[in-house]
Image 1 (spheres, helix red, strand yellow):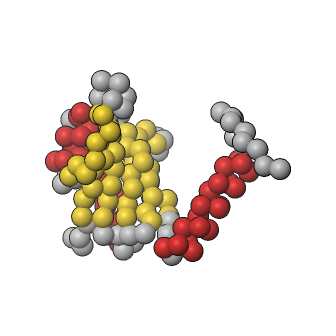
Image 2 (cartoon, one colour):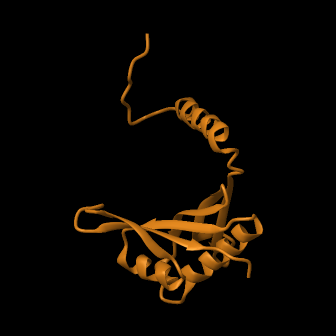
Length: 141
């Protein structure tokens, strides 16, 4: 007999069952994703990562999950440099598009300066703000 188990502490094997099952389903449905992690790291003088981009490429798209610029480097075009580096690698991997989301107004403006256009909005996420979903067509440079 099956049952539903609601938890805030799933173990790795529980999450793997979901991930592996969905990956197999999607591969059968639309073909393999060729998913590959992609990170662009900002390192300090000691070689320690202090910020950057974390995401992946799959099905011809770059998805930026996280982008963080330390306060000391903000206002210097660092977000654009990070996105440029990630987009260049994504193009080398055969990607034709990129997408990202944010609820931070400053990040939204930075992404739009980088050529990203809003394709969706989720109001009140979080309360008092909107979460914006943006995309950009990538072409070889």
